[in-house]
Image (cartoon, rainbow over all chains, first blue to last red; front, side, top):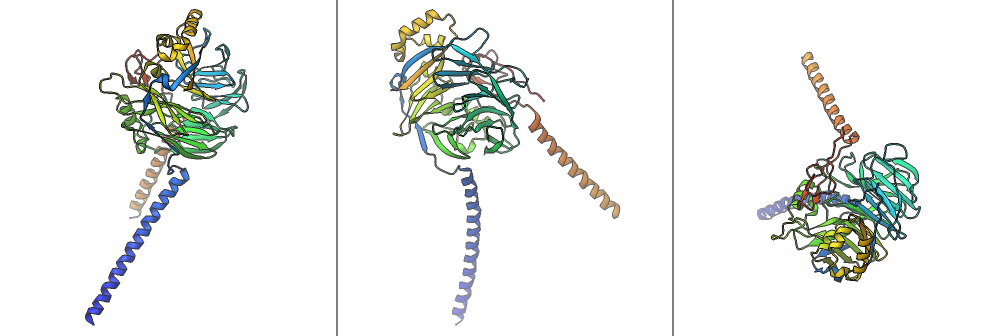
Length: 399
Length: 70
């Protein structure tokens, strides 16, 4: 009997302990599930739609063919040296040099059509052009000033239309099919977010991509982080130091492309450790997607920096990459002078991809197999254009 | 006893005011200053990265020192 009583008492004790354990388990599950829910709201817990595994490299002439070489005529009073953004619309080219604050529109054969924006602090002027975007529906050019915290609207002939003021310091700009504006905002903002979405009148819709308050601010816009339009009419946005490109459709973001490589890459969970990321980049220790990418219907074109080889002096090794959305295959160009020079901005229109190279650099590459068909054109250009610093637009297609 | 309580209340009041002002000050700085961050770029001639201020003459085509405007 005593044995039975002891057994019952043991049973009660262990049942009580089980209840406590179960309670703790439920409590812990409750806390965890709350965390997951939070992440789910931000849309960052989903798997990326596409994984871009960067491994296969092929010769640039086997990946692309050059269709057209267009030298751009630059007036003496304008400077286009370091192109920050290139856009193409209806056979017109738009190029921005943000250092000189020059935004020029060119015709399809490279003639300058108009300079957009007047320097100054007046109501129709802008003290700088940090970035610009094209409203294809309304045929408007939208200029962003980082210094004035403003966005100015111009028609394609360069006539000023209106200006709106911004709350935050923004450094990159794009527009979606609803004509809402997506901006990358600098680390000096009280919303502690990397991305702000506003409507066409300047009214805030929402901020996205939060960062922790103690983040060390370093501007990586020459290295990493980009915003552009997606083929489906949304935004493609990459935070600095992150190997994931998000698509923002309406008010929601989801991871669309994730870059992977056998080489060491900067881990996603350290994306806010900007200074440490830059130290790795500057010593050539990591492979990473550069700040340029553009999407077409079937492909993602991207810049890629391969990590430094032990025998190389250079800490950069720029390549051009292509990801095929249908076959899920990725190719990057082999190390060559041309892909090194195509490290600047790119534009995609239909199935063509555009780059800017200086005339001087292009002439140096005249013996490259990819330029074989264009030797005669290049000689003609060299004869007619005296200035070797002239930017040249190179139109390419996938082979 | 009453005066000790008064002194303690005064200290608490001042600490609260000080903390509020220090928070307000940070907020104003972050909001109103045109702060500019170091923006490193690759300089092809020097085969290295440099921030805008230190990159002058190191192969960067156009280099401007960033000015912090308070």
